[in-house]
Image 1 (cartoon, one colour):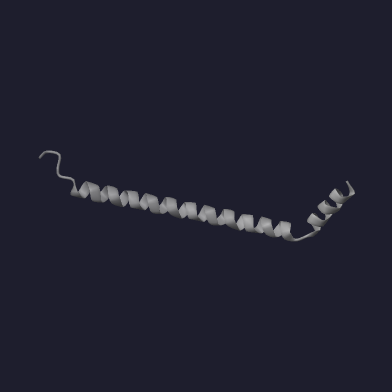
Image 2 (cartoon, one colour):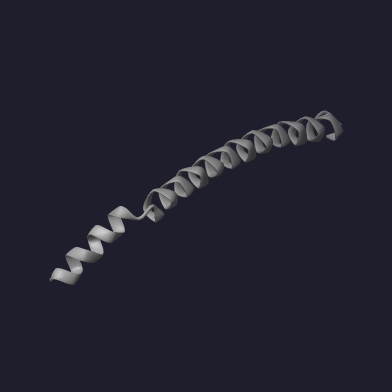
Length: 62
């Protein structure tokens, strides 16, 4: 039991924990930015393809 307590205290004293948290926060921010960029690009591409598709479609009366 004493070694477990000692290990927990050593873990809390080390700076590896905060560094890992900082990396996790940075990774989360990067993922959010990537998702936002992909969503925006996908929306723009969809509207562009829809416009081109409607432009080359023959008229319905023919």
